[in-house]
Image (cartoon, each protein chain N blue to C red):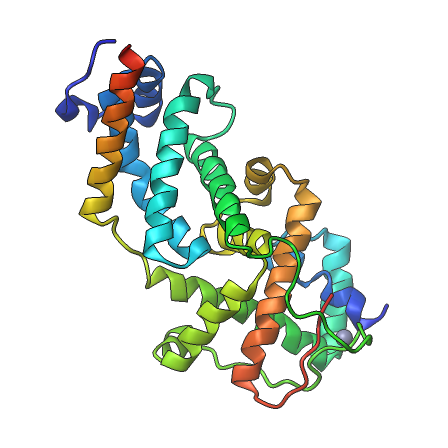
Length: 82
Length: 208
Ligand SMILES: [Zn+2]
């Protein structure tokens, strides 16, 4: 199998969704091929970095935004009553 | 319809609130909005990239949800159902802004598809340390925003929000294998963009 074929399995491997026989085949290749091993580590790091980045960026809903939604909903309730 | 008092509502389980809201107990619906608004607002920020659009998305999503709620059958979790409405709204906004939904902006010119970043060194192990670096933060944000809309949405739902491929397939009307392959393609694209930061000058590739 070419490296490209192994690389297509990397995401499933990271997500633990790969069947055991393919895990064996992939792990054997990763133990022999430095390039694919680096690809595997950097793919994992890409996910971790993105996740860490967004975790630190979580925002509260601004009060004005929330108030506006409830205002609009109440207009809708009124309309629905007629 | 009989209206609940908001104090009592705060103690109710979500299922109970949904049942009441379905029969137009509006206070119950508003409690559902309160409990879920932060999730949808933050999803909007990630998918659309600015506060104004995120606020619009939030409002449209709950107004749509209000009208659609009587048809909600509880086959999926309520949050999954809300995300489905929210992502559909996000796609409409992206279309209006002419943001490509499925086409990658950088079509690679060289045809050697099997090549990838050969010899790229491993990246350092502490993501927190990296993220104190402003340049990297901007690069992550820029890279995620460069993903086509549907890929970005799938990446955010799967890798950031932690939804399963099955849940995403229901939200977006895609097959599970299609979701999985888009998760992978998104990661490959992002890894490629980030690798220029970790090792400038390395040839980029790995387009699968
Ligand atoms: Zn290899």
